[in-house]
Length: 116
Image (cartoon, rainbow, N blue to C red; front, side):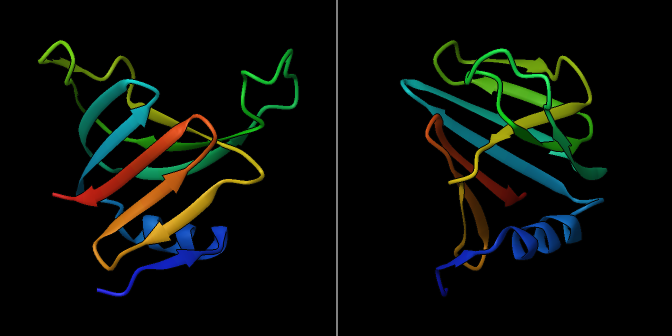
């Protein structure tokens, strides 16, 4: 597998091609690890122009679909609270692809997205 960094446009083209398929998102933020499995119905982005502080990201990747969240610390499954999974994006976000999995690395954490 060839591991490579992607421009946001290339990342977007790849994630869009996964629409209609089942994906797993693994989020590593600080000491927290969660896994979400969902059927990816649509991919979109939002821009937050009315930010009060830096905690609210300027951009979000929105993965639309139904699924379940598994909180590894609590070892429990729960349905997604809404039919949208949000990933905060920053100007310095890195996008990678290893031939099977996508990785999004931000200052807050790392998100791994893979087909299931």
